[in-house]
Image: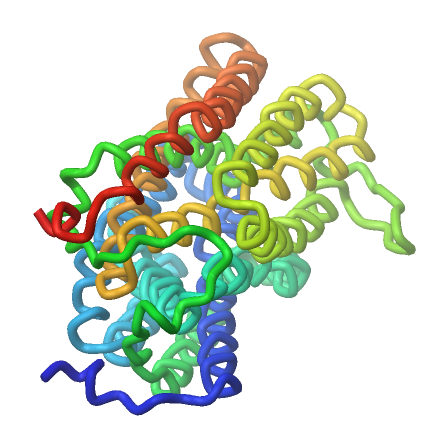
Length: 425
């Protein structure tokens, strides 16, 4: 008998508590990705390394964060969330600790590996837990959990920026890394394995599979690879903006131009980063909730179409500091929802039992997309500006929007219509 089978039934309040713990853990690892853009130029100024060379560390981080999640998800499905998040928290803190004194690119890249493994362990566990605790509200639960990662860095953007300016990026890496790691370790001790839900208990308004597919079975399903390709297309543009936003702001000459909005006056980049983190967080539960109501594919079509238009608008109007702040917010708002829509769609399509590992397989698409981040800087340099990068990102989002409606929707409908016996083959 499995440990999951021995897990007692829990109250509705208890599962919401587990969701909150996951959100806090996700917020603590958010800066590993979303705070990275603040460190790129200071690192380059101190060591004389090129932006492209430094951004290789970001790519390594995303690759190790994503491509190992299926393995980490297997450990979660087998042993529960606590040990995986515990190790993840330790590695996250260690990675930024190494960054604080890294004086070679090799050491910076090594720290990225450590940080990526840790962040992936925490991310994959918390999203998988949400999918299992809330089979009736997967879009909302996955969205709220992913919101911790998307918006978690919003409250620390200003203090990290201030510490970098006053004490150097090294101290920012050191103190925030240790603090964030400690919080994740504490959260790990509070996590509990979700119980198994019977199919009859699921009252979701969206269609869900009647079978549980193992990871090896998922990889044989064409519908999985359609979702994977769409994930790559949309993630590529968002990751480019996340990693290169500081450089784009400098090239647009709005980096340190003060912007006054909503009673605040801040440099355009700092303002944009703070607003972007909030919107990138809000979009995940919002679109997740919408998808619970109207379906996954229609929600994808709407969000991806908004992203395609937003990216082009940012290029054309982003040289104005106010437009830069507003349009980057739109870009992040229409991008972040992939981290709620795709996991919930995956669990709907392939079941709850192996939800952590299966969602992890799909999440590796983010790692594949990250390979395009250094190429975006190279492309911008080769073409003398960001035009080609923005156009490419916009086209990819438009294609993904059309695929959601005309390809994924009919394929998933056909997949869901399989009889239970056939689904196990």
